[in-house]
Amino acid sequence: MMNFELVGMVFQATGTVATILTIVYLANQIRLNNKLAVSSIEHKLNTRVYERRFITARDSDFCEFLSRNWDDDDLSKSEKVKISQYITMLIIDAREVYLQDKLGFVTEGVLKARIDVLKLGIMKNSISKGVWQTYKNLVETDFASYFENEIYPEGFADIPATFHPLARSEDHLDPILPKPKS
Image (cartoon, rainbow, N blue to C red):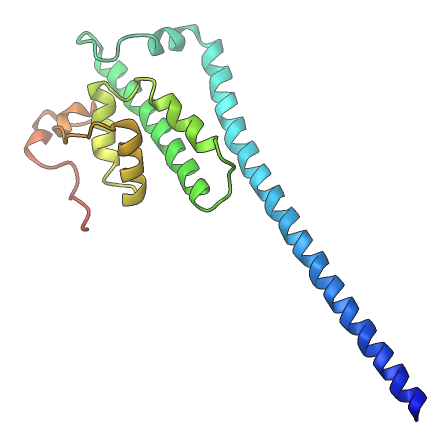
């Protein structure tokens, strides 16, 4: 009878050790999968930026357009719309990276790199401000606060809707969108 008890205790000890080793193995697998997920997300985000930069570098006309003074009064309506769409794309990209950063899916520096590009001055012209005026009402309030603190540290004064090139001239009579409730 003693031998059966000893054999039973050995099996219990072996089972306990196996369970502990399995838990350690699974924890390591989860950690590795999280690192791979972060790497994959960053790769996709960075690939998108690199492709945009490569396409821009190959397009002399667009490079010339990007180098213009976007506060210039002689911009055509189509150039103003082109600016608004480009700025919207940059804001959406920054928001997406912000959300990924908030969830811990990107490493430090990915969000900073996106914001630093916007701090170079591209957001200082009236068209970019008009785009932000519209877009800030569509995003999460924490992103809007973060974005304004980073891009407009001196504060962002609401501007008329007509600064957005897609607005009708009479849009200044109405708010762009209802203000989010606090």
